[in-house]
Length: 218
Image 1 (cartoon, rainbow, N blue to C red):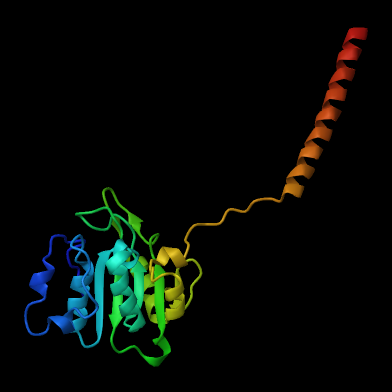
Image 2 (cartoon, rainbow, N blue to C red; image 1 turned 180 degrees about the horizontal axis):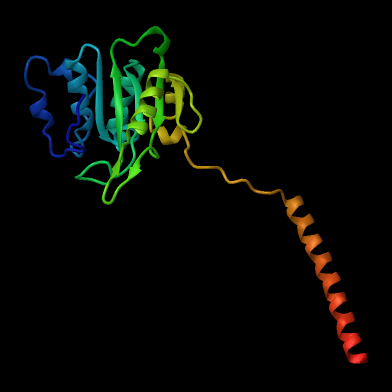
């Protein structure tokens, strides 16, 4: 489990190409000097034998360019097991949300070719300056991760083919909406109600005219 510096810039690609094992360690390529997110991630993947969980900036799963090319190769190698979108304002040094990317070099057969996306952006307890993850929030996220199945408005399992069709954008919010859908009435129903209102209005106006007529005749 790791939380490397987010979007660390200014790293020197040439310095990373030194040593005996750099081609193996960074075999998926180098991103731009504006962000070393996928440099850190490749270093962890190369060092691990099983699972790696990385807390990182949300942009790492959706940005294009050279980062997308790295992400594409890692997806096609079937190393990503899950992406979990966390709520904003969880950290002291930033209000931005984060994602947890879980990599697994030893996926069990039932998870091969699949990626679990969890949108936990609404799972928090508000506090004065920060949001907090309660025990219930953590348990809900953990249960979804272990169950590895679709959960309405919370989790979705996609295939590598679906990731490919999404241009390797693995943002959970792209696949799992937590926004409540608004129910709109049909045009026919609205027009019928307007007609009823008009009829009621005419009846009231007629009654008012009768009242004024009676008052004037007295």
